[in-house]
Image (cartoon, rainbow, N blue to C red; front, side, top):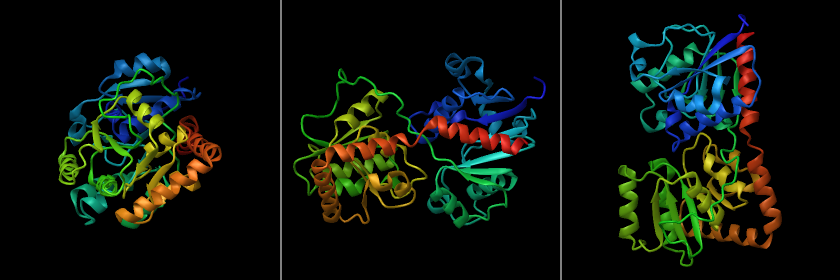
Length: 358
């Protein structure tokens, strides 16, 4: 057993399961736990190691995350054969490093914070890029975006699509929604940040009378306040409802019962919620920006602009097509969702680990 190679997965974001990165960390680990890798020893980084150990047992080693390890002097000094930085934003880095794998979800910060290469955020990212032995991206778009803003070292690059986080359908029959669900409704879920572009669908709702809109996600940040104001300024408080954060049961309840899933995001490294909605055979309406066409393929409908009238027309054309071809549309949507699989993704990451460690 002594020739086992050691791999450190920097997964401390795993606790924040409401966000995309936390979901990614957990689902990747769960996918890996279903595979055999006897010649590798994988160590997970997390503040609540007991919780992970109760689920995954001896399959992994565990390192208790400490906030201090974000500082250079307190970086983890133990030498691993491979360090996997599972996202581009982590401040937790190895003190020294034999091999380094970087997974890039997006480099939105180059557009949203600063594109100046000397900006602190970009310098931190460049450090990671420049020590990478290999790089994985979660979409062709995130690869293209990284190359657009940064000089990427000449190392092996791979695109590995995320899986669908909904692996088992929950019984939602006893779920009690805190917002009205007696009327047909559209649904969306995500962080309340500007790039989610919720205002576009709220403005569209001014022209839509027979449906409600329900939006889930943590809305107590600045953008959440702006959205609440937009809803009340337009007299939509009895038509557009915010649930705040929801449980998995709640999310599945809304996805299962909505008339359509709307996702007008203008910047998305991948975009998991549309895949989740497709699992239920629901029509999805996406912006045609960034990675979303890769996710929706020919199963989704796309908005190519955010004019309310135009968005409404696209929406109702898509809904009519869906209603008139329901069985065929549901089949295309559920097959599309099933093509994104975490066990498959985890197996591809394992292949990358092995190719780096050869």
